[in-house]
Every structure is written in structure tokens, then in C-alpha cells.
Image (cartoon, rainbow, N blue to C red; front, side, top):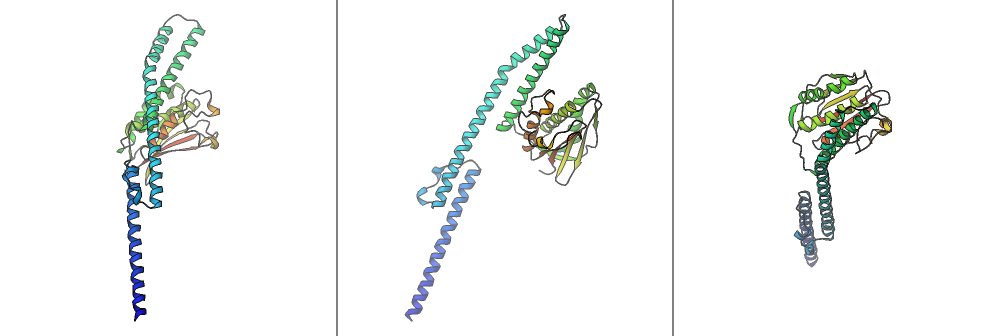
Length: 300
């Protein structure tokens, strides 16, 4: 009889330990879940958790999340400082750039030698390049720091394609390039203003690198999850080893050193697409032209 009692007691003790361990595990998981939830919504603080009640795993997790929170705050502070610096530079350079344009215009109206006219044209081109660089840096820094927020909504793609083409018809005509607007029917979820800017960056590059009597075309391809807004050209093409580099900030291809540009348009394009749930893709090969595609999500 005593043997049965001992066995029953052992079983009850084992069950009690099992239930206790299960309860402790559930509580630990709940606390870990609370930590991760707080970390994700940005409210995590190590002070909010009583370390005397935490297991070794929870304690290490709390320390790790605390260090991540500090790092994230420091990174955000640095981004804000960079954004402020870029904005200050933009503000401080606005008057000098305006004056440069004014004096360049005044000089162009004076009787000049051929060499003098060449110098004035070069000065005007460099002033425009400086303004373009400043504008691109300001837009990029504000996108990166979240100051500028995109507002994607379901819209027709055709209107932004038509507006972008209308802006670049004169530039294409200057180089005797045929600018073709093909099939553009389709709907997707995107920020109209910023997607148009991304498309204009692609058009600007396409016309810049396409030789005279070439062709630049825009068309839309609709898939199940995305609509692709494609810009194709008959330019020199891009070697495969440069495909991963071309979207980097300030990257300029060794084959494009003579073309005007600062190497930030494609970087800005990728930033715009990333921030609205899309992406940009390149298909190109030397002597076969290039196709840059903006993939826009069809569902929010």
C-alpha cells in the first residue's frame, strides 16, 4: 500500500513540476513577446522590465533590444543632422546660384568673342548642374530621413506617362530622337508625384545616352501583382558587371564620363520605388540598348 502512495505522490509531484514549468515558460514567452512588441513600436525601455524577475534569456534579450534601441535613436539623430545640413546648404546656396544665373544672362547679352560665348555657355551649364545636384540631394535626404512621406493610392498609370513624355519632347527633338508613347493602360498603387519624378529620371537618362536618330519608348506591362512602367532605349547598353552599381549614389559609368550628370537620378529613383512597395529593374547589354522598369504594386 505504501508503494502505491509513494508512486502516486511521485506522479503528482511530477505533474506539479510540469505545470509549474509550463506556467513559467508561458510567462517568459509573454514577457519576450512584450519586449519585441515594444521594440517594434519604438517604446522599448529597459527600465520597463524588472531584471530581478527575468530569466537569463530574457535578461540578454532585454539588453540586446536596449542596445538596438539606442543604436536606432543614434542613427535617426545622425540622419536628422544630415538632413538639416543639406537643407542649410540648399538655403545658403540659393542666392549665389541665382546670382550666377543672373550674371550669366547679363554676360550673354553683351558683345563677346567666340571664346567668350563658349565660356558663358560653360558657366550656364555648370550653374544648372550645381542646381540639379542641390535639388537632388535635398530630395534624397528628405526621403531617407522620412521628412517627405509618399502617399500611394490606386490610380491610372497613363496620365503620369503622358505628362512625363510631354516634358521631354523638346529635349528628344534636339537630338532627333523619336520619343514613343506605347501601351500605357493599367492601374496600380503609387504616389503620382514621386512616381512621375522617377519616370522623368529614367527618361532623362534614356535621351541623354541614346544617340541621334535613336528611339526611346514608354510602355506598361500588367502582371498579376505588379504593373511595370518600362522605358526602353536604343543606346549603347550597360555591361552586366555595372547593373548592381548603377543605382548607387553618385555612381558614374566609366563609359559615360563625357555625358552630363551627377550620378544621383537612378539612386533617387530606387529610393522612391522602395518607399511605395515597388522596385526598379534593369535589363541591358552592350550594343543592345537598355530597359528600365518601374514595378508598381497593383494592390495596397
